[in-house]
Image 1 (tube, helix red, strand yellow):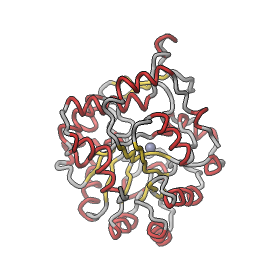
Image 2 (tube, helix red, strand yellow):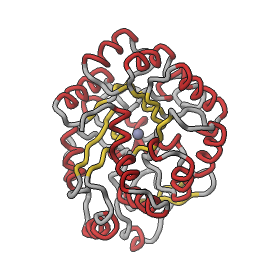
Image 3 (cartoon, helix red, strand yellow):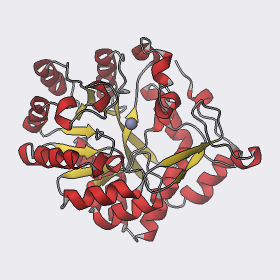
Amino acid sequence: MVQVSCVLDYTELDKLFYLTQIAPRIPRRVFDTHVHVYLPEHVSRVPDSVWLSNWALESSRALSADDVHECVRRLYPDTEYRFGAFPMPVAGIDRDACNHYLAQMGREGKLVPLMLVDPQSDPELAERDLIESQFAGFKPYPTLAGDGTGNDVGIFDFMPREFWAILDRHGKAVMLHLPRKERLADLNNVRELLEARDKFPNVHIILAHLGRSYCPYFLERGLAELGDPTGFLFDTTAVLNPAVYDIAFDRIPTTNILYGTDLNVFLWHGKREWDEREYHNLCREEFTWKKIRRPREVEEQYTLFLYEQMRAILDAMDRHQLSPEDRDAIFYGNARRALGFTA
Ligand SMILES: [Zn+2]
């Protein structure tokens, strides 16, 4: 088991950042909709080449539910921090064992579980499990269908209509990562999203990473095509870009935005730079994906990426003068509605 004390390198500088930038503004209670929880044995068949295939997978850590609790106690000691969790959607994960573990952790009140499904999942079994194990919904993923890149599949290829119908019958949620290179700005994605909202109105459709809009182009263009965003929820996971938050808080009702982090991916120190369509990660730690290097004394001043994200949200909320009720909705209430957990 990975020990958080080893994983989370919490420095004096992090503590100072927390005390000055975050502690005065963070709400009393937070619900994080987007954490991957899995144990090392669930991914023992996933080869190193897969973990090294992109920066997010390489940065991921296997964390148990207890590990995450220990982590957030350290990060946010003054906040009641709860979270929704699902497996790492990576080919080769022991899907059933990981789902089973999450359901157990859900029963113990440690997290709110979402169930990993792929197009090979048996719909009847999935429906039975969804209800009996009290999952809040399904977690499909584009790379679990097609050629594995996620670029050649549509939403209904990796999340078949049968699965949508199951969630619709029970009023459950789907945590959706958009496929295709253009993400929310892709017209086929928009068309399929509108179809899903129309045909399966009882599903709480959560678009992960604000529709994977790490840069403003995707959210700007996507929202223009989507029209009225009613019926879609947008999670803020891994978004740091102030321009993206400005678009989100201008155009998406605060009832439709959810706080999320991808916590297990971001236990490193760093920040981001952007151009119109691409982001570039800057980090202190050594990863094989680390392309941009700054002088050591500069990198040593980086705080945790998770803190940078929290600051970006809080700054945007201040810029947009969100009321305490709006802040509570984004940090807690909207997730409660979408995932159906009790207070
Ligand atoms: Zn994620």
